[in-house]
Image (tube, rainbow, N blue to C red; front, side, top):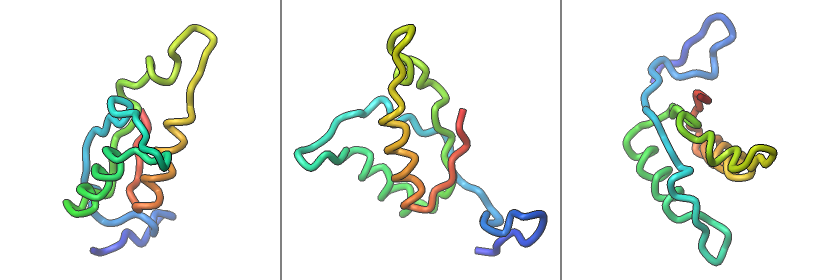
Amino acid sequence: MQQIQHRGFSHFPALLYGGDYNPEQWMLEDENGENPIWQEDLRLMRKAGVNLVNLGIFSWSSLQPAEEIFTFEWLDRILDLLAEHRIFVALG
């Protein structure tokens, strides 16, 4: 795929392809600390050519379950996994 070569965007593909992704609906881990649903999601995204997801669109209640409690661990983990799979993120 052709790369964009101007204005500091050389690391972006010419075509960004994807959609909303809501991994907070499937927060479970196996005995190895991995989320098998997320792993399968990522495999299928790469197979379909997805290189961009919109993330965090409806996740406020997962990020802040109580007034003074914030849980960013799952978000950190999925951001790392998406980066490992070379999938860009538009954070909502």
